[in-house]
Amino acid sequence: MLNPIVSVIVPTKNSSKTLESCLRSIQKQTYKNIEIVVVDNFSTDDTQKIAKKYTKNVYSKGPERSAQRNYAVDQSTGYYVTIIDSDMELSPEVIQECVNTMQSNKGLVGAIIPEESFGIGFWAQCKKLERSFYVGVPYMEAARFFKKEDFLKAGGYDKDMISGEDWDLSQRISKKGKLKSIQSFIYHNEGRISLFNTIKKKMYYAKEFAKYTNKTSSTENVQNQTNIFGRYALFFSKPKKLFRNPVLGVGMLFMKTCEFGFGGIGFLLARNKK
Image 1 (tube, one colour):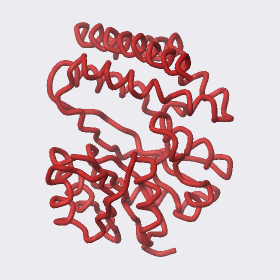
Image 2 (cartoon, rainbow, N blue to C red):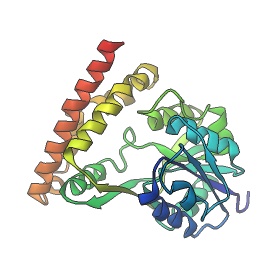
Image 3 (cartoon, one colour):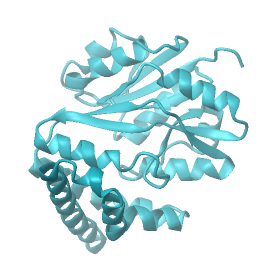
């Protein structure tokens, strides 16, 4: 198919600080046959006002991003769909490269777009370093670009999941074909990270993570994703990179240890409550 429509799905909730940059990066894509679909979770800030500057396709839906994403795909008209978050920015070639990759590789059901973090302050730099270790690691990355038809046949995102839903969809859809990474990056705006808020967020998502681990049939992936020692082994597999800046490397390891510790507490609390 020549020059198919690509629907870029953006779920939002009080996203006014980052949404303008996100939508502008979509608008600046070298691939031009793009439809932007924003589904907002009843924001109380200027999110919808900003969204309407870039697209007429602005909807309201909740309660969480999985339901928002599925609803947006239903409303879309694209042959392909790509799902990003409102705090992400696309490098200019992302959509073009995804389309080229899908069209030139038979049997592909999804494209993986690598991510790079950026933000303000020390902990944001630690998060950037951490995320850099995951690029090209199959069990840590998830596909974001699909044929709409394949997305719908796979059932979309699990509406009951608010943690691990990206991995879950990738694993279900990959049963029908292969996933392939592109070279261009998504840039994830972490903003100004505080260690306390990072730990709090990790506990929140960890409480919901059992829905993913209990459901998925990809045992090997789950073992890799939840293996704390394996994650440290991944970090230490590139010691020059890890300790190029010793303070940053130690800070990242400390932050990750805190996340693992409090995430584990949240996971156990959720299991005991159940």
